Image (tube, rainbow over all chains, first blue to last red; front, side, top):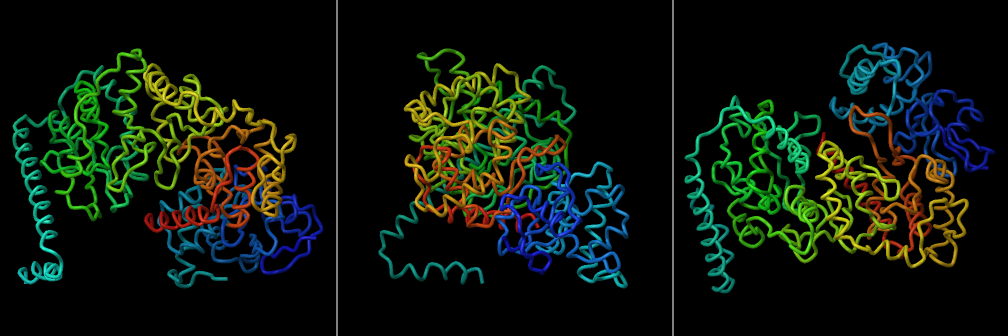
Length: 161
Length: 457
């Protein structure tokens, strides 16, 4: 049994320590935000946060995660009460098929928690590790900029979680 | 006010011995004299007519200048992150402060558009700018001084036919006053061409000419002394650059298998050789530049470097029966807890092996995508710096090129897990003694990233 802390909740997981976090999140914990894309750490659809950093959950065996703090898309808000970054993606309509978006949001969240007002160049560099086949990159960039502003309260009246 | 300012720093000197003051005064005089002479020299050269950007140049000369500039790796330092090529502005951290690479586009006001060919030649050979000021040796004129006039002129023709970009170079933030540079030059600049070595063939000599001159390989691969000059007696013995280890390219090469000239050509032109590894860090743009250079030039570099390595240290270890194991951990006889290379801490080794098997082996084990780690020079080098950096940040393709090469594991591994993994990899994939203080190296790599983050924000 391995104890995982996901979105502030503790879970006893009965899985092989070699199991990738992504499989445990989706199959055991029924947290389906993170997606299986390539399984090789190349596309970013599986991205979640561990101790504040963006991590490919498809490549991260749970044996590394005992006692560490995991945050997934579900930890940012709900469909009824989306978090500021989720709301920014909605406001900018930054999804087309949407498959990459949970990973994009979690990667952006890691950046904004470390650096609340990143430059455009910093956002581009940081988000480079996430692939989007639909081509919504410009909207994704706008969404991250928007979230950076709303999270600092700079857009009056914007919805906040 | 001015008078007060001048007097203040002198007062504490009262308590020291007079000979110290005399030494300081002599030093200041020498600096002032050499500085003045350099200035006078500059006025002498200012007579040649400044070129216009509309000047016409022979296209063959421009084409030659293009690949010579690629060998010189000019674009890497003289281009800011996301900036226009050759427009300068890239900060170069040195132990003495930060120097900003200058704009070498032919813009007349912010670039070198008003420089004559002889101004450019003097900068390359003597490290003096158009106004007669000494250039900081971050610009590697200690190497460029060996470059033939005709090659410098070709590079000049190439640069003068680029698009002018108006971009003012930020002011340097450096503690060393410019006049002190002339002292550095007197000590370390050996001006003029290298005498050909008749005991070697033309290819070897061309290779040495490129390696010691334009390519300035020693800029990274030779260790530096306290004044930032390359140690002449340790030529290509391995150095450190921006947190990366530039491995030794002489007989101390840590490569676990012998580099042939053919493998070096492939590595230098594609950034990858399956029997040695991937060009990462500051070497990645070098390989990209060399992919644009005529193969004969890269062959000459390879022939010279291969000869300098000879039967290198790592390969000697391999020949002594320590063949690199390309089969991966699962099929290998040895294990981290085995007799031949036991790491200091059995618990750490066990943790490291579990991490390798679950997070790394999918790609690196059994000849799949990743390089078999037994071939990697990062496993056998004198410090774990490169292995730590590649594990933390991965290896990424150039902007606009396809795919990841290796994903980053920065968030997945905490510091202790990373240290366990590194210790295991060293024990499992090399026959070199364990690295000391891996934890300290991990902390250092993380600090360096944080300071890079701060600089870019």
